[in-house]
Length: 169
Image (cartoon, rainbow, N blue to C red; front, side, top):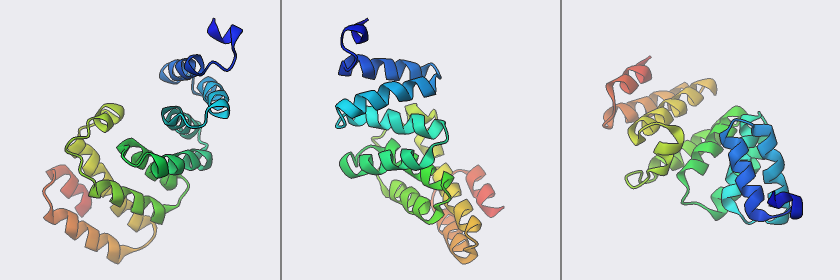
């Protein structure tokens, strides 16, 4: 094994981290990604996997730190915005989550296929989910006027009937 000869081999650490993450051994993947990022913190894809693994383990604040770093230096990655919003939502930073989701909705999804693959949803489904999340978060914040305004705005846009029905409830 390469790691037996060189415990800080970047490619091997990255590959092992991804393999463990993909196989559901999330905590083990954290070890590999942490070691990798200590040696080479500039590998953004490893940082994203690390953030996802942290989030999967319920470590939302350190995950958010990773996603905020990635948004700053890798702003074209749609998935990072989505994950950042989910981390903020889990930390009950609802206002920040709303801002992040709105930023994502403003972006042009038409060429984005990675997010579809990662979330196993169509782009239309992702957009609809974000709209519902935003309204749900306004309600959690007891900002009923904003939620009604947002619902009215979303109902006037093209979208699925199921989403519109859910927004009305």
